[in-house]
Length: 182
Image (cartoon, rainbow, N blue to C red; front, side, top):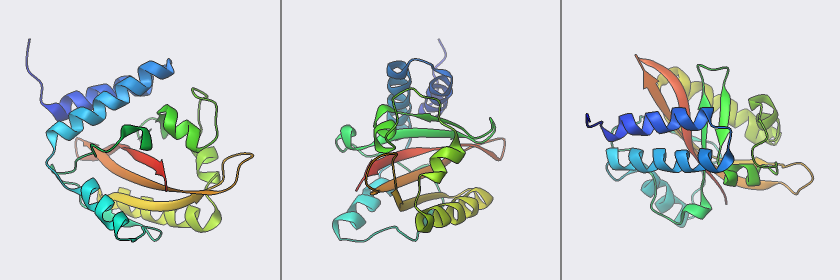
């Protein structure tokens, strides 16, 4: 059996998760992808984001960064974070873990349209998300953003979003990352 690099394994698990119809299988695949991505990376970005958070800094205006092989996920309590993938090449199809469904107030497993999800962001956050995301995609950057969303039938809440691009053949194929309530 040929040994595969952790970043290749992470990509394989993200692809499988995007195609999974069973929510538990999808969540497990997304967690495995995040674990392999962390193995492939050194310490850095998310730890820096958490350090800024502890100092009371916010990312309400967004924060873009050049992803490097050092981008690493957090070993913090995984129940805080929800995993997500947006397949840019496949009509911006979304795959969410149960935690992201909970944040957005949706039944787990319901197919989610990106336009519907973006409409849940309050206007000030939606405008910032669109601006930061477009810039990040144009320059192959990742981004961190604190945004206010309004799940159906619930009070608005602030979430933190981390997005990292996955490039294939020099093009961004997917964004993937983490979301959690603040």
